[in-house]
Amino acid sequence: MKRLRTALTGTLLVAALLGAAQAATVKLRPQGDVLTKAVQEALAALSTKELPVTLDTSAGPLLFLGGSGTSSAPFNPDVAARVVTVGTERRIEFNPQGPLPLADAVKAELTKELGLSAWTQDAARARLSGADLNGDGKITLADLAILMGNYGKTGALPGDLNQDQRVDDADLKLFSTQYTLSVPAAAPATTPATPPSTGTGTAPATAPATTTPATTPPTSSPPPASKP
Image (tube, rainbow, N blue to C red; front, side, top):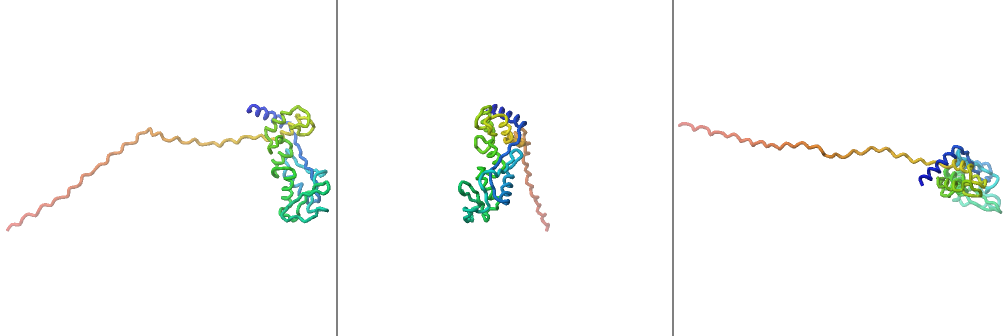
């Protein structure tokens, strides 16, 4: 296992030297300048140098601020957004008087729409780059192993990140831009414990206690008898 990990890591490092940035395109059709700006700002928060996230308004669900046409029924005041179908079109309508600011409501609803675990760059990279081949929400050497297992093969296979019907160097380069090598944190330096004293020295002998003899009280001589 250790040998396989070393080989995969080496392959990835070589690909990283040749890698190029990949972009993720999100298909949404926000209506109106206010909502379009909110969506663009939300997507910008997901973008990184390695994976820019851009808006494509040529397709995708329609986004409205408030109801529109036949779906203009009042909102439940506790609902920030709702999804309705009008004819054959899906619509995401945001409550203009809802419990969340528009920016937060857009992020919350698009998190569900895009299938993200959270509105973060890491979650977007795992979901939108296509590099999370085993679908565990992370991009790890396990995903690289899947790609390498199909390397050189043709068809719609796991690891065909650019969807050109073959798994080759181009896919490896794309994967390398999304995978981050995890370097184990260095263990903090510890101060060696002071060894307990072995007690090899001999404690000095305690001098025996000396006693002072009691002082005999002086005796007084009786006075001489007086002569008659």
